[in-house]
Amino acid sequence: MNRLLGYGSVEDRWGSRASETEALELRGVEKSFKKRRGETVRALDSVSFAVGKGEVVGILGPNGSGKSTLVRIVSTLVVPDAGTVEVFGVDAVRHPKVVQRCMNRVSVEASFFKKLSAMENLLYGAKLYGVTSREARPRIAEILENVGFARKRALEPMEHLSRGMQQKIALARALLTSPVLMLLDEPTTGLGPRSKKDVQGFIRRIKGEHDSSILLCTHDMDEAEELCDRIGIMVDGRIVALDEPEALKRRYAAGAETPTLEETFMTATGLSVEEASAEGEE
Ligand SMILES: Nc1ncnc2c1ncn2[C@@H]1O[C@H](COP(=O)(O)OP(=O)(O)OP(=O)(O)O)[C@@H](O)[C@H]1O
Ligand SMILES: [Mg+2]
Image (tube, rainbow, N blue to C red):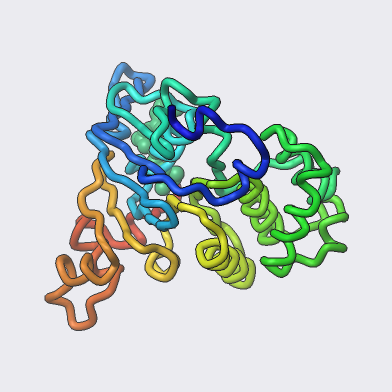
């Protein structure tokens, strides 16, 4: 029997558990959407890749290339038309409830009860995963301390916190379950430079200190290069390249004076970084 299906005690959930399976594995995933005028958009076209345990995989891609659809499918909010998605070896389409317990999605605008404090939101988050306040409190304190979040501020209403601090709490909430697959859909988009650095620092610490696997969609080349073990480039619903940053640069930007990820992205997608995240598109 798969370990996750036998999911029992809190220790199981929060302790580290060895498994040979990948944290996430997609095979031939397809998704199309019908548009108003009867057209069909192929949001995902034969997407296959895996995220290893403890690995950070980034996905870079222009607006509308399918990144958020990918994240929504993995988080079981959207059902794929074809293909398989496995989270820690469990089929996400057939067992959404089981896989939901060991992953968390943090998107651009995390949702909270704004009048409640960060601590109350975190306790509520834990409760959704079947963890009592008594069990959750020490775990929350540990996470907040690890990421340098002042405990006093955790007692203020969420709406008093900056957006960067709110994103940190969203990430902390995602760490309440373990082993954990974190799905980060543009976690730093729209943040000021200081908050952005803070949140990126938080993700780096999660990577270093927690047994987390991360799928990170971003438009930020530096963020991808700094945080990711491997980077995938997505164009029109297809992953056109997926490799370690240095290998990608060797393949796509070797001819450039200074081989950068930006240069790599432009060669692989045929778009400039500005064109790829142009305002007004989807
Ligand atoms: N619920 C939906 N209904 C109809 N079309 C959709 C839906 N969700 C996504 N799409 C379409 O699927 C394609 C991929 O969208 P998606 O949001 O996954 O892209 P993205 O890479 O996340 O873009 P961005 O960088 O702008 O966030 C787009 O053409 C989009 O219009
Ligand atoms: Mg998106």
